[in-house]
Image (cartoon, rainbow, N blue to C red; front, side, top):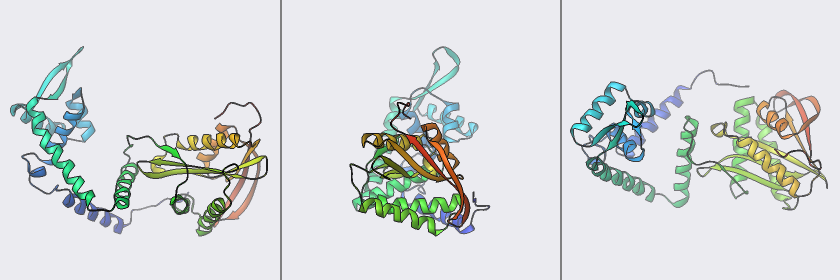
Length: 316
């Protein structure tokens, strides 16, 4: 697997430039957030207290990454201003639960509305398609930096724009993770072009994973013969892995193959794709053939896997 040994200085500069740009766009450089008396940190603490019940200082500090001493002083100031109350947790006299007072709720309300209006005005400047692209890009940034989105992934049908995106992403990901060259992306593009050109819904299918408006994975079913279907191009975005999405896509393809009357489902993969191979094995596929080959600029071992759909084996 190919891994980056060090971060490019230009990437660091680009990310810092984006941070400076975005903080200016949403007004984080003002002395008081949204022209209020509250700093950004204070407003964020108010937000958490307004939207979450049963919070303790320790949980709040951990979730926001705040120094315990700094947070303690901030909360004490809120108490003195009549914005915050503390009560002993039921059944645990050592824990104090935080809550906003009516005054605290009243102080937070204009902050919340100002933030909503500011973002609405920012989005209103953009055409509808650009708004979706912006929100999708933000969701992708969150996932890449380790934030699990609240919305679960959906699995939907193929839409315009998916084909080019999937070829682009698979070409890039396989180059980054396995060192595959441009011939792999060309192969993916050829497979996808043929899938669309020859598409027959009674014989083929596509399942696209989407999360927060962004494609996060896919799998395709194509006919290999009258009785045999072929699973193709299973992949999951790195930022969406660990959620069982590969298993869901594989299960959807298996169910689709059964629904179309296939008695067998086959696939071809390479031995370096360990995560995918594990999914196939768990789904009941059997490895029936393997052979070394030189492709995509790499020495690989190609594998053929087969799943018998005519048996009463438990579905994946």
